[in-house]
Every structure is written in C-alpha cells, then in structure tokens.
Image (cartoon, rainbow, N blue to C red; front, side):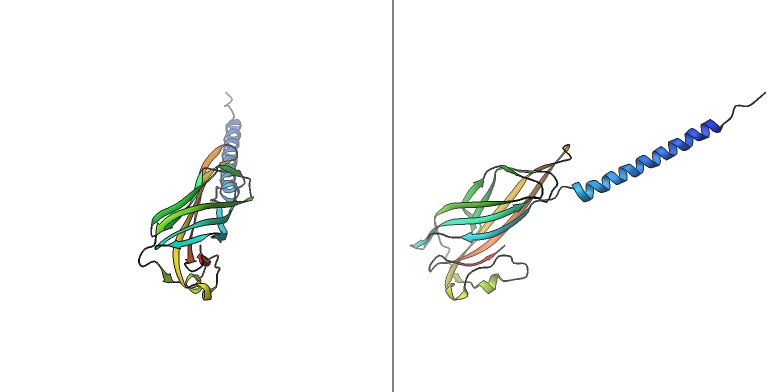
Length: 201
C-alpha cells in the first residue's frame, strides 16, 4: 500500500508563512509611512506685525484700535480646514476685545496671512499697571518679535494677545484628525503716544 505524500502540505505551509511575513512587513511599512509622511501635524502660527493705529487716554481710562498680522502655515500633506477662531486681547486677565476669524481652508504646505483689525472700548487702567517697560525687558532667548525704541517708552500699559487656530485634516481621504495651535503675545504700549514699545510672542 502506497502512503500519501506530505510534500504538498509542506509547500502550502511554507507559502502561508511567506504570505504572513509579507503582510507583516507591509503593515510595518504602511505604519512607518503614515507616521513619517502623513502623520497629522499642528499648524504653525507666527505674529508678523502688531499696530495700534489710534490710542487715547482720558480720566485714567484707555481706548484704542488694534491691528495684528499673523501667518498660519499648514505643514500637512492634506488641506487644513479651520473653524471659526478668534483673536482675543486681555488686560490683567480680563478680556477687553476680540474679533472672529472666518472659517476657511489652507492647502497642503501653504501659508495663509490673516489681517485682523478691531476697536477696543474704553477700560480703566489698573492703579499699578502704568509702569516703565523697555524693549530689553521683552528681549529674551526665543522671544520672537520685538519692536520699539526704549527712549520712547515712558509709562506703558501691557496687554496680551491670544490667537488659537483649530480645525481638522483628512489624512489619505479617510481618517479625520483634529489639530490646533496657539500663539500668545505680550504687548507693551506707551501711554504717552500709543506707540508699540515691545512685543514678545
């Protein structure tokens, strides 16, 4: 009696093993590409210009108009759809003004410039807020944008600007990820003539 050959079974087992190894390597390669190329990254925000076109001090209260030019770069390989975000101004922790940034989209690898201007209603100065601040006080490693002349500083009022950009990217047209970034700036304004003494972001 002739026994059945087991060669066929061995060949099938070897083929399955090769296929399994191939699948594992394919998964590893796909994950590697996703993490290095398509991994969602937060947008990059930079404030490039700050202005105070008009400034007024009366009866220990301040009012002014504010303008800020920001750049937002999308480092992803997919379009960045951002929501209705806003720029807010704070004085001693209290919000004194804001403006909404309309929803929009930034193409992959592109930079979008956003120019926002609005008026800040009159608010009282804190008794200890008018102090002498020089540009050197803001000039620290990694401080970012610094403008102004120390000789024009005099007494100053310091405010804080906060910009947050949040939205989503759809990776490979399949996976949706939420991304966000923030940029805060300290701004010293001269109470003498409303000039910008220093900005640190």
